[in-house]
Length: 244
Length: 396
Image 1 (tube, helix red, strand yellow):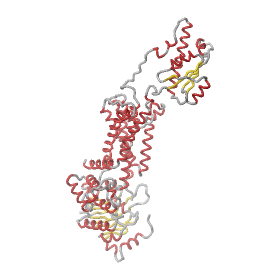
Image 2 (cartoon, rainbow over the protein chains, first blue to last red; image 1 turned 90 degrees about the horizontal axis):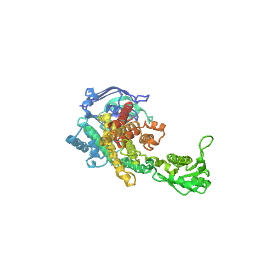
Image 3 (tube, chains in turn red, orange; image 1 turned 60 degrees about the vertical axis):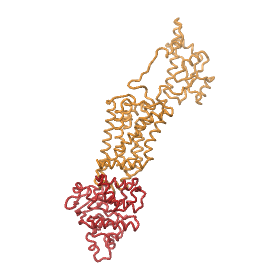
Image 4 (spheres, rainbow over the protein chains, first blue to last red; image 1 turned 30 degrees about the horizontal axis):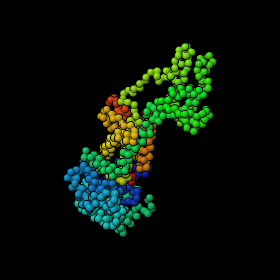
């Protein structure tokens, strides 16, 4: 089970006069892929960072399976995983060393650690490059290593922050298939992206946020309604003006 | 513990992949130890290694010889003098002579005249190179006055009908003076000052790799990822302490070795080893704790590698300059010596000197160690506070 409920979540960065998130309320059901859309600076990464426990000081309530997410993660640290936008691993370490380290800091050891390293590497198809320094991998392999690290703890909820940025079509297709297969195994995926066609292809539900507010949220078909596509709805709601 | 071991392993692997950075931590202090131990060897000796040459010019050649004979020795060597006072001035101006004593024509007669009652003492002129160390100028000046006093006393005694040779009144023959340093095996040598000094300097330079890796971790999002994996920030900091503590211990061992092997190999003195290795280990550990904590605070406060380099590097250089690392504190004026007491490097140096120079006990290292540990705790608390204040690990 990986139901996630966000109720009235607000957050302001220290020293900033504008709220990064304002009264955000979202219901993310168990299983499936939830697309989180918004222009640059809309608050997507802030929301993901709060859910992942990287940012503190938000007001509001975040619950998972009916209990506080923070409390749940206190008991089960691996309940939620994140694959950030950045290549968040050590470029001077090999892929195997990165997997061992990130597994180790999650409390994995011995045979269990070996098993999780192997499973994550196999899932991301990086077994052949385990001995290579992470910094010397291609863009697509870096994204796959990033994904593998996020899967080490077998998270029930996985937050994916623009996981296909800067990769070739083959790697993108592989990553999207992988994400679909994760959802097929009962995991809840929260997926942020600027690629509307990706979201339309893999997400069951979506939310569009802008200026820290949820503009629309619901099943993909409901959000698109009678329109020609997600991008048209997105542009109608968020307007055409440049954001950065 | 499992998570801490994983953090230590990662830190060690990262360090081992930056061999150049690691080498700097060892080669820089070793180079300073050799260079400064050799360069400052004279400053730590009772007399200069190279004798200072002086000349005496006097119309009375016997008197000139008497001065020359009594002034020579213990760091001063007589050389033939210029023909006249004008030539002597020119010679000193051109640094051909360091010291020239000019004895006036009627000097010997003036010595017979009693002092007081309007009689001024006879005037000697000492022409000195301005580059001469003041301490040596003072020593030579005192020696000239000693010879003059012997001449006056012998003249007075002859006047009183007591035949005595002025040479018998040489200060050096008045009594044997044995100088004994107390609380150690001997005088502190250049190498005994410089090995701990540059070891401390090198230990504090772990600020560079600590802050560099930390900033890269923050920039690349690995720090945020670790936080999302519920690794406490305090544990992340602790993960840095272990490996760098090992680096600091290795630095200490190798710098002692440099003092024992490398410096003598280049012609310097051999480092005298301490009697109490446990106390040396305690001082090293406290210094390391302070140095690592300083590195962690710089890492947390700096937003870019450039900031860390400037804050860490300049901070270390200032602490070293003030704290008696670059310039020994005993050559500083009193006011600067008081200022030096605010530098953690000075505290560490006090601790090392207590063990290595004065062969002190636990009580002698207690104060510097307490200061270093207290500083380390304050710096660590500050690092945690700054992190807590910012709350933000990765901007949106």
